[in-house]
Length: 500
Image 1: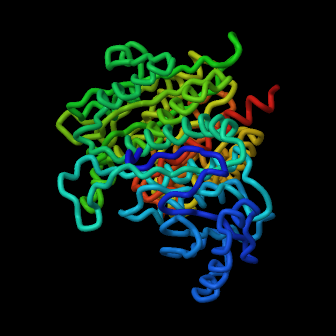
Image 2: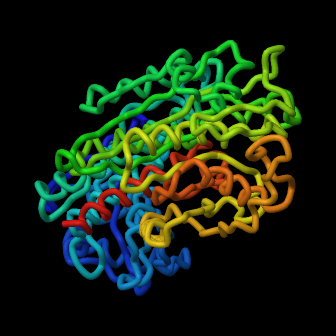
Image 3: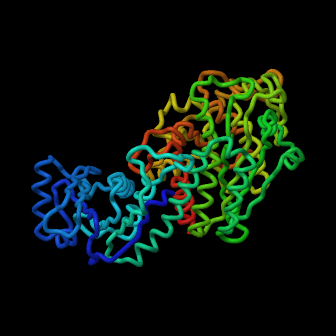
């Protein structure tokens, strides 16, 4: 989290300081409290809008310096578009647009949290505050010198003026836990691989103990005892030993079966013996985006005291090509007992997930489980970087994910699963091979994973295009996006609310 921006809530009657932020619809209509606060300066907004051709379009801005008639030094008008078309994600966007306009000189901002038609609800104001913090995130801890315009500034205070301060604070307390979860996921993805190797990743995940999360860490010896030959085969070429971290949040009814989330955590992926091209290989530090999301999600759930029983499990390895690395042609035995012929050592993530999926299925017997993995480049060919690929053996679970994806803006698109694809991963020497070749690469990877869920309702999210290097948005300017935390937090909330 950027420590240069703080948000809080104040009464609507509090006078503006520094920069005043207000909202206008596509007819340049302002809310009652806004009109009162601006007084005679309200006419200035219309004159400035006409001069700059500001039409109040959703997410557009009108910036007026030294406005006459108000005490603020600057007046920023954010367009909402048609009020009756505003979606939940728009409130986050408005906060992000605001944060993007802070500038290096801003030190105090007051936001009149009012839509042109009515006061914002506590939840809407909390969403704007969350958007501010998500946009303000920066990962610059390794920079010792700043470029021009990047000079360190003091903390910027963003105060949202609301009709009910207590309600807004309560709503934001929950949302802030989710924001912090996203920030944790972004930090993990952005860290360099010489800093964040499997043991260090496990240590950071274990810090969730402070929030009441029960932590279990499996070392190599424990995994060998369990027969996790698929995961350990990936890790054997690295000097950094593998780890599995299981995080348990017991916030639901005692005895209720949990829901489970499993993350691929390849802290660096060279491709192994099937080594990747050198170009852009540095981006493979982000091949643990699925594990980062699961850690961020568990932080969010524990932080807001979710009334749910949740398992988060991450498989942490480094895929390196030393003299002990596994080879194409090797056959490994997974924890399930199924054997796998290694065709390409760069198809390693599915091997890690295979053993973790089986372990979670057998030990915890979850109601459903979802894995997240930066698994295939093929999913980016199919879907680009705006949707994650969704594969599932359960229509209800798939529909839930699609619905919350639309609500949160972390969208998914369902892809096919079919026995017709199984023949592509049949092996003449083992029970299966770890890649089915060029065609349908993301589908055959999902078909492979499905063999390790033993009929448990399951979904696989291929987040190769959304977890890192995705296009920047109003609420994310970071290379590591933290994709999936908000999506799955909402899934858990809606699932348990629906059960009541």
